[in-house]
Length: 234
Image 1 (tube, rainbow, N blue to C red):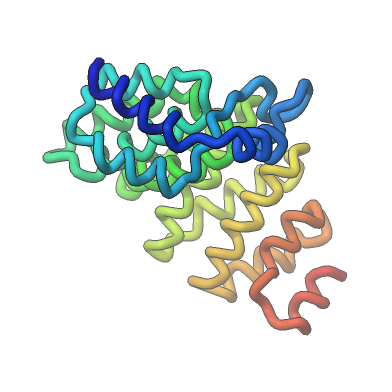
Image 2: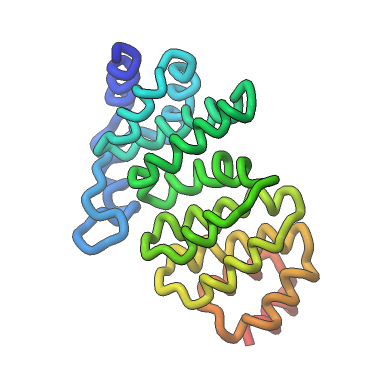
């Protein structure tokens, strides 16, 4: 407990009221918005990463759990940085699985886009590289926006290994998703896939561009030539 008290004390020491005010708006915390009710201390991400690195060897699993359940966004993100490190430094598969199970059991606290993006590819995506990926499709069909985003962001780990099949299947599921955050995330992953295999992604876009939300399509084609952009936007 002493470790997390010291960590929280240091986070608060670096907090600024102005950054907190900006974050409240940026992460859409007003009533009815996707981050409704989230609270911010006002701490920059590089400081969170540095403090996570400083304390990761001192905190217990139970303490990371306590940090993840904090009402303050930055404390949850710092906890996820530590969870990432513990997972990546696992001594064996049994220990790695323990951290994956821990991640999944705390998923209700991974409830904004940066929390998802900072953890899903590293923990769940890495774990599933050589395993059954059924959970991603369960998450994709959930009514929970953050589970949806975890599903598509986890494919980044596969994309980096030049595996695009699950990206394409999930992207097709999300074509008709109602939320802009999923349009952006899916378009981003398609763009990353395009960097690996342009032909595969362009074939997907040729088939589905007319059905895709414009935001998703724009994110997908962002790095293409003006000629290709124009063709797909038609």
